[in-house]
Image 1 (cartoon, rainbow, N blue to C red):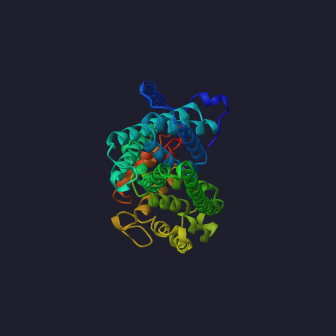
Image 2 (image 1 turned 90 degrees about the horizontal axis):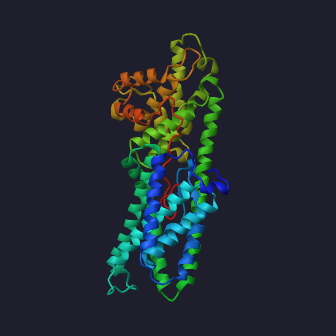
Image 3 (image 1 turned 90 degrees about the vertical axis):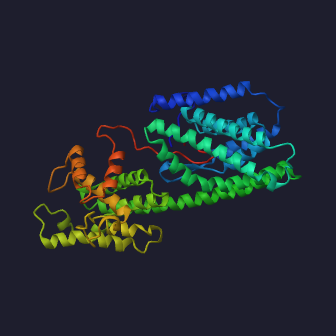
Length: 441
């Protein structure tokens, strides 16, 4: 993530679409109206403590691989503020802490204003619901009496936070809102549940004799959680870098296919997401895309780069790359499931492919996705034995072979995510997940 200058924090990213910027201004206007017109109780110095801790938590957010999601432990603090403070102050602590963190990292105005406003509104709404539902007869120290309301407040925050963030991404990248909502909800729920539990503990510690000291002691385990998450992310990055190195070694053998594995992997990841596969399967498809041709390391260059017509023996050697590649990765623990995708990415939907002649749904879904992406990239790039086809011609070929060589559903999903030939927009990232909630990284 590139930083801007201090002057540019008051400018808008020129690549931000107008409709997304107008949505940010709308959220900021609603938040400003609530701040101005909501009646206030007395000032609570504890709000300043929470604002500072939230700002620190968000500043130390962990960026997941591909810079797609930013995760921190800030939601536990935000949630505690929802319960402890009235809606106005809860929103100030959460939204203000978020905005301060982004300004400290020199994000542009469209980022920090959006995140500050949407976190303020999400927190305000959740706190309002909580205090409205909690009757004066409830005993704060009795957990089971207030637990349903505590859970409902977290759900309100989660719903508003996810909706605002995914709608912003949808407007920015012209993506279907429903698909983005499914993706964000699927991966964010486990994170939310864990941090909500810590937030409830914070509330009860603060209401006990432990007070603010108890909160600060509970902050230490949160830092351990962040450290563990950081270690996990570093391990994932190491995995990805290892796979990319293997793919680069393969590409170095043939100048005509340089970058092929990276392009196929990225297209396959987008198609898998469009088909709403579970996140772990999307990741496996991406890995398989990077390694789908790794078996060609075992095929002699004279055969791979042969310009003349291939003999039957040549074809047998080239076709062996699918089984060789599957055998190479089969015993790598973190690539479990990838081996079958590599082995079967040249199977045909009608059962005429290789190496096993699998048909239809018997072919792993990841392999069916790779088959379409691999074919498209092969058709649209120059090869020693033919010129590249135009994107339009390649798309026509995919459509004509849907139901024969390719899975029709995969072809349809591929056409949904295929960028226009003259498109200058990069592939859209997933929106980021609960750092004091979901926000733009």
